[in-house]
Length: 147
Image (cartoon, rainbow, N blue to C red; front, side, top):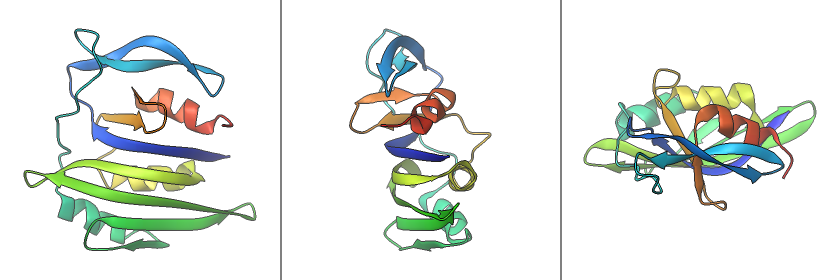
């Protein structure tokens, strides 16, 4: 099964936690909220720099990375082609967010996340079209569901 997605990946600050439930792709999911119930502000940075993340990505098989932070990884799963397009964004000499769009198997997805400090790093997945953010487990349930 392939994950399908378009999201911004952020480091998850301690002040943000799961809150109210909504329905997306037929799944009831808990979205992330600030302590006061507001839409979260993702102002934390990853523990890796832009350059460290880009160097880690460049080591993945079937991945092409550009110095400006754009990258593409592609492959084949059970005779079906998959591809993920991504872009790294830095702020104050730290990796601030990563935009990812496409579809891929969970193994490839995990390999990309490891380049940003996962599984030790807590991550927030901000769904671009839906305008909500999810923790990892909720995101994976959403990404596996048919759109």
